[in-house]
Length: 253
Length: 40
Image (cartoon, rainbow over all chains, first blue to last red; front, side, top):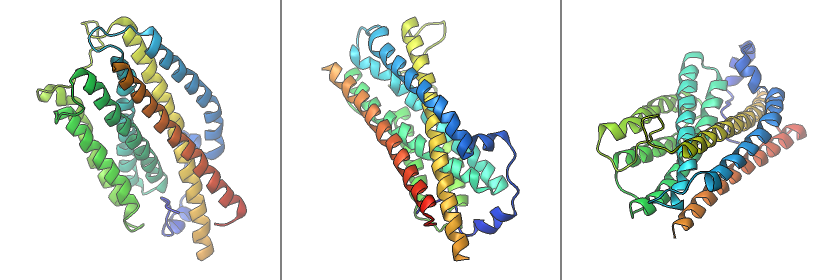
């Protein structure tokens, strides 16, 4: 079973005092189960509200028609992708500083979710582009840098399943940190280069209509809660895998 | 025609997220069983 826990962590874990921080307390199995029981129904309800608003509340865009409604879940998917990779970035730095496998578990969990949401961005974007630009893909700065980000973190996940388990967390942490450097480049690509990708205007100066803006905000909030649920579930799974690996390692010893 | 793109996009989002969440639940159940059976 592919786990972030290795035999070499056994001695390290046995000599490490349990983390007392509130953060890891939340990630403890029972605590996270309680949080999930509350958070999951709220998330499901909010996603239903966001879906209703995207389909019926937000006005139909004049030039793009219904295809513009893809935007209400395309932008939140991109936001969650960036947020996930930011978690990978922070957790990877913490792993290199503390050498605590819990940080490595968090980085792996967030990377998996980040790749999932970036995949959604790369699938829904071309569908919007086909109706707006008449083509599924152009080698535009924002599209290309997003594809690069996806490839980097797919590589990150592939590396984790192929590298020796002793070197795996360190190598993954380095890629997790370096890969995140692409995120600000993606964000600023629309100002650095002339691109076809639209710039999102949500300020008072113009851009989105009030109902469209509200719909986008609800969709962003619902996907942020979904991210929290998925991350909790994924970290719980990783903790259980580590426990299984720890028991196996102790039996071998 | 543009409605088709919207339906495909929303179906992809719902489908992939459901598959991933279901996969997480199934993987967690599998490891729970392994832990309870003492296979570790």
